[in-house]
Amino acid sequence: MRPTEICDRRERHVLDDAGLQALREAARLSPDNLPLRQHLAGQLLAKGYLAEAEAEYRAALVLAPKNADITAGLAEAFVRQSAHGAALAALEPLLASPGYPPRLGVLAARALFGEGDTARAGYRYHEAVSRDPSVADADLAARLSAPPAPLYATPETPPAAAAPAGETSAEVERSGLTFADVAGMDTVKEALRVKLLLPIQQPELFAAYGKRAGGGVLLYGPPGAGKTHLARAAAGELGASFVSVGLADILDMYIGSSERNLRATFELARRNRPCVLFFDEVDALAARRSDMRQAHTRQIVNQFLAELDGVDQNANEGVLVLAATNAPWYVDVAFRRPGRLDQPVFVPPPDAAARAAILRILCRNKPLAEMDFDAVARVTDHFVGADLKGLVDRAVEAKLQQSISAGRPIPLSTPDLLAAAKSVRPTAVREWMATARNYVMHANDSGAWDELMPWVKGKW
Ligand code: ADP
Image (cartoon, rainbow, N blue to C red; front, side, top):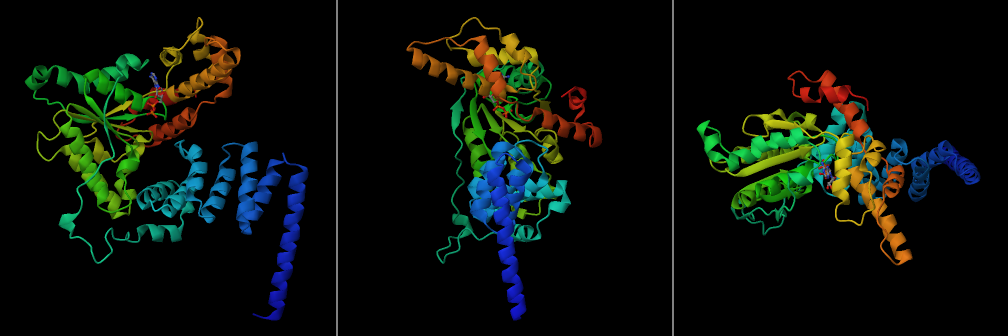
């Protein structure tokens, strides 16, 4: 390197620092100037002052919660400091809505990869790039498609046949809920009754038509609308055991053990029949296979299909598979073949009457004044069940504090719920409907999303 070059660099560095110093000073003087703070944070990140960038992004996020650019900056600052868990926690609120910016998906993939969760990193990455190829990260893609480290790399490597039997962290529950605990959703409950409950309650009738109990239903709809709640209630309604499996239980970083764990989960359900076997986030497992370059994930999908079909005719007798997804459009069509998850059932956001009914259920067994749930339902447009639960929790907390100060229980009242409604913001229904509208209008060749048509045409 020539001396003048060194000199140039040093000079530029000093200038950089002077520029940064001016920016820092300006931000200190106008702490509420969002663009300024964002600019400072971006500069700090670009120059590698990672801890300081992180602090600036955090402060900016307080001014503009859920801002995608700021969240992306914060997540990048975390990833570059190897704080992968923190990066995922920062991204999570945005990733929960279906139309999230794809570049956030790539950041999540980098964080997941940093945590060693290659399978989920691969899913996130390919999902993001399939939506926007310009966010591709060649380096990450190459690392994701490298063969994973062998599970047994030491000389004591046991032969494949000695591989441990699959394990499942899933537990068998007895659900205390029934359909009476699910407000609204009459059509959905009816569909589940016909598909799941009647074949078991009236086997002769079904046998007469050559139909057997078993098979599955794909529940889809916006996050928090009650898919899990409904599945649990279906199990209780049927007097069946309930096994719930999150994706994390299945997608294991070690090649081979996911398949074994999946098999073990189905076996657990089969040993406890009649059983409702519930898979959450099935889109992650079932993402269109062409999107996945990873042989590993493909194997899991194939294993899932094989388990759904059952090794022999009676394997899944009395095992009812309910799968839930917020993103049904990513679910492989192979999953929807007859005998598999062949009945997509839409779990809609609640209308005002259903919201009032959900609130009534959520407030059961609490000390109550006379309540006007309809009034609360009217001001909670776009709230789903999970949002209403958050609202009631918040009102109860406030009431508890008041009761502690007063030294006596003060019943929950309508104004408490109305006040809580002001401080809780509905989650992702509007965004979900926007994404759904895109699929219904532009990718509905097979008519798979016809059921959504009246919904997406509504006002959101
Ligand atoms: P999803 O699985 O669709 O994301 P959940 O089933 O986890 O949503 O719903 C979150 C919570 O909202 C549930 O635990 C339940 O308390 C409440 N909830 C949602 N829908 C209903 C409903 N129809 N009736 C009563 N409670 C509901």
